[in-house]
Image 1 (cartoon, rainbow, N blue to C red):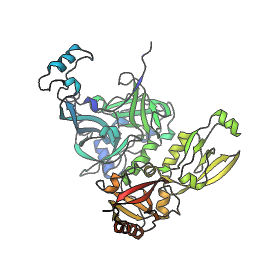
Image 2 (cartoon, rainbow, N blue to C red):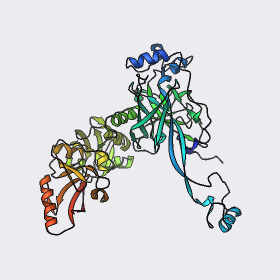
Image 3 (spheres, rainbow, N blue to C red):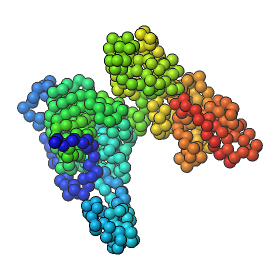
Image 4 (cartoon, helix red, strand yellow):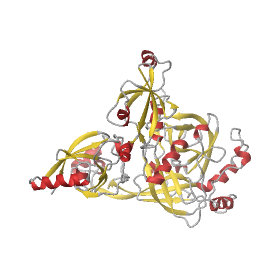
Length: 513
């Protein structure tokens, strides 16, 4: 009987105790390519492979040494420290069902009240936990890309370079949907860095190089080929390159290079029955990562486009019933209030083209919508009744539609006011479009919310729009202030406001005292 495979993400958080005495990541500073790497950093140029090797990116090289030497100065080891709670009896192991467990519960265990034992949780103590991962520098100013799961929950982050130098790092932004995080270190001199390549140009069979810190053993290189492309694991925006280059725990966040020295993937996960490499590794494609990195660097969070539809695949049976020549596109099953509804899209439409490009399937549409600019109109073609229908949809922002966006909502309006624990501003047509609402909508947009205020207690978030207060429309700050004054004069303790999020209305009672 074959043993079933299980998917293991490359987080090194479980290696803290095992790897406490592992060799450091550091290498001798005077590596053969160190001088050339520093010169490239001083000139703000990325590290690249020699031209002769770049021209042979699809031919098996005699050696990968030149490529490894060229890009290694931009690859880093990441160590994180976090405070975790653990039972005082951590480390004590008894099999489930052992009579000793019942014995300790009945007669007590030293340091534990009667009825408790270290195997049932018991008193907790705080401990420091270390985790290991990899990353790579993408700018001479010190921007570093890694996996989100490498640094998630960390209190301290330390980056160790190929030369052995270490620097503290801070988180610039992170995206759990693609498992990407961007860090920043401050360096007195420019840092050697690498650039992203075009992952769409990679073909099955192309040579690739993986660099990182597997199992805490320090700098390590492995090679292989692209085994498959466009793999999806469990995420909405998954676009993984599958490779047989050896990837293990600790490689998380490390780069996957093509033979030109360009990063075409970020090593993220492996498929394995035991947690070790069996030649099935997954790297998030650079064409996904580079867009996320740009947004995290600029905004500290992602800003993905939002169409506002529910979709399903077009099967052969559905295509035949609708008179479609091919089973391609994305079939619309529901159109809630939002950008698509405002543009006239209907349930039963089949989206065949988005922003000038053919839509292959729902996954393809989701990724392309996410990459499209928020608040701008795009051309969408749907099949309806056997005929193509051209629509122009002004995309909203997914994070605000889902209520997951953080930070302040940008507004062209100068007039703002702090009311009931919120910073409010008049809703402009531009902001309405960004939020996926009709440009004609009137109201007050919530720019930020005081986490300790009444509005936050009621679940309001940045991006919500207040359209009514006291069951009367509000279009300006003065309207809301007047309704609040009326409620107070009437002796009421709260005022009923209508809040719209992604076009969906709900009533909330906010205190006015």
